[in-house]
Length: 312
Image 1 (cartoon, rainbow, N blue to C red):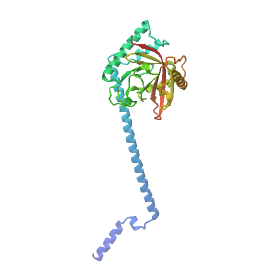
Image 2 (image 1 turned 60 degrees about the vertical axis):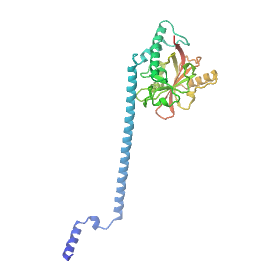
Image 3 (image 1 turned 45 degrees about the horizontal axis):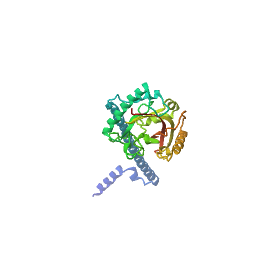
Image 4 (image 1 turned 180 degrees about the vertical axis):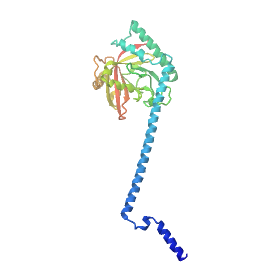
């Protein structure tokens, strides 16, 4: 290369050189740039994590909402397909108006007519469902609630119907189901235990939490269980928050005395008191649902059997 060309090349490089290339390297400046790059990397990582969290949260929220819609559609269609007038909540409210007979016997006169009509309607419903699934135990209705009007299922464990309907189809809302330890004959249970999810859209057993309100507790007293053998009326005496390990789901009692001791303890747990409660029938129903807080926590509503209307 000629001397002139070398000079021109040097001048060109000098004219187009950056400040960093001309100036001596400053260690402090270099450290600042390095720190800025690290901050950018951290910012991008945090942003990526936030986007992932948002995406996962959106997915689960969407999945939950879709599950609620599925449950709502399924049970609304169930009532529509019954062909017996839909929900029996309004009809069962008539029993609440009749009140308790105070002993285990059959009503008479006009009251008997009301019981007969309700029994025949619910018996037909239960037997129809049982043609599809032999696990149908009976039906539960709680007047005063808007939605607790469901078939009761029972399997060989307490997991099967957590996420399955009475048609055995998978559904996050699951079914209302009896503890697998309970006797197939409702009369054979000192403590008849029934479970259901606490759904945020008001379905299944979510309305049990209404009994934590004193006014609601005072105005609504009864739980009705229908089987193909009769109507069983329970009077609510206790509502409280507990733990799934607590003995509120005890099924075996070595003696009547032990049962009475247990029942009185359950009564003492209640947030509110109900006057005139007697355990002389030796039969209680326990309704249990999650709190949606700690996974181990439960809300419990318990009622004592006050009337049994057996098949005429």
